[in-house]
Length: 388
Image (cartoon, rainbow, N blue to C red; front, side, top):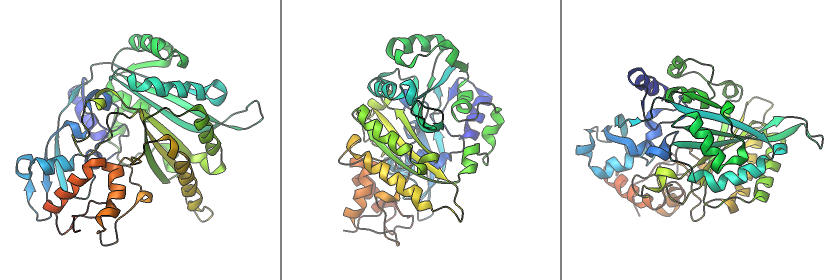
């Protein structure tokens, strides 16, 4: 993604692509899963902004949009990578972002009313103007609390806004005064610079976006990780957050973060069937759960994975149901997998398939059956052809 952002910025600082926040994300797989990022509330997913593709099928044919047909073109834009063939290239549509965007990040601990502010954020963030990307990162930090604890939860409220700081401050004062945003909290910059600011690279030059091997310090220190995802359709009560805080303060959670990304905006306008990615209208926000650790002879990885599974189980009453939805680009084998030979029964496959794709799953299976009936392209969670 970083290479794409630099290439665009060298030619025009007012244009961009609705790509990933993390510059090291691979472009092909990102679009294959739908792809949400800083501009998705304004312009939709990455997959919504693809014009054409060059593709190789299991028979070695090189196809474009016209020769592959609209069904297959639909499937590869959000149906998950590794199921249908190999995408050689994407032809994408750029979007307008203007010369100036504004970024802020404000952190609040539990002792600074983070729970109450977060509870309020749930009710209004999806209603924010579509030129905003409202997100939250939740982790723990060392501090001295009134009850003598050395550890507390910190909630960081971050936003990228397509516009000037004075406009953003006035807007937030009117609709989210609880956060206490002022002009001193805001930084104006170009869109490509916001990738650095929100991607934990604020003191780097744009050239860092070209470094495929660059890792921010905490990723180097903790190379092993587990990720899960959820979608929230109704605000979580404050008592529900208290249960999350309790688990984040457990010893295994020192390398854990939760990320909330507000929905709404353009995402409410697309039908669920526009591309295979179905998570559109009706979602307040998406949650990603992340835990990282360094694996060595003295570390039992199962401790951390078990912690993640306990938190995921705790969240069940507060998130989407029938199915409990998940984001396909955060592959999670806990929700199901194919047999070793790549085949499974339709009923077994639909358990995880509907979590990722909802009602789009049936169409994906039909397309797979047509384009790759021998299941040449397969992995643990690939779409299998229908065989009864």
